[in-house]
Image (cartoon, rainbow, N blue to C red; front, side, top):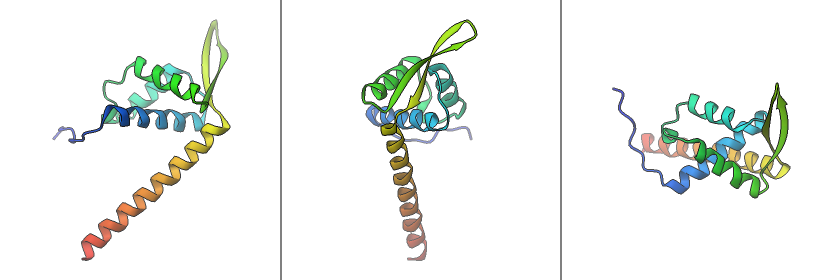
Length: 118
């Protein structure tokens, strides 16, 4: 018990998955980096163990450069925080990624059912 599943995920794939998770979180509400990091850590997704602020900031910077998210300054008490929101382009990506995941999981379910009956 307590063993971690063995899963080999390339660094590049991990980065892309992090971007999708960031955008998915932002599809529900705007957020600032520390809040996003804590939200990801709280889900205890083993492929993101050891996720650093730097990893998150790099992904956020990349998403912003690609036009999927945009930042805005928000006053939180006496602090000025940079909050991020999805752009219309980012919303399209989130919707498409959700459809792709559903299609993938339905395909896996079908394969497993066929394997059991065959």
